[in-house]
Image (cartoon, rainbow over all chains, first blue to last red; front, side):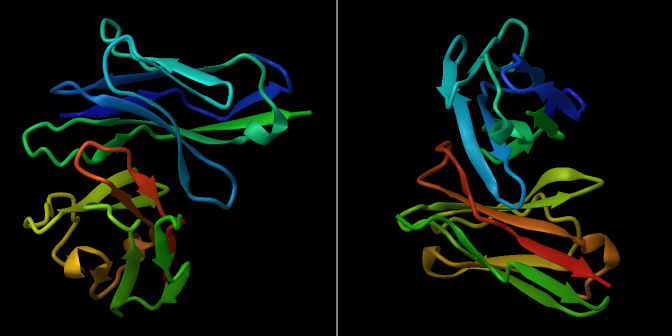
Length: 115
Length: 113
């Protein structure tokens, strides 16, 4: 079956530090990959996505590259801000046998950025 | 435009009672998903609707859970005879079509006492 594994949190960084949150996946087909973010007290928001191998998704200074050979989709940002403090979820959408494309999520990684 | 809306935002109920959670998807979105976010299980898929097709109920954890979608728009998730382990945040998402980006509502936080 499908699964997503992401690094345990919390990740605590100082402002302007470099961020990497690792994500690896297992899928039966050719999935699309996503990063969603959940700010405190808010719902899930799409941060970025990639739909095929070697695609790079980017948004708000965050980037992630779809690596089929390593089945990974690591999230990076060159310089984090306090406002980036949130929980980040890696997810995949794989048609599989049913074609429903429901999202399979990782467990989430809490990022805390200190001033 | 308006995003996905859900109601109520919070619900406290007693064990054994029935609850109904509502989701209003983005206008024009044909696919609708329900997920559950709980401390022990993370984010998990519950049920999926696509257009007028029969729903995919494969993620529902027990027969106490059911959902319907009327007129291809609003959806209601019903939990009968609630148990404490049903306490979670119930999230609804919609997408323009199968395989398109899913947009999430703010969720309903359910607490079963």
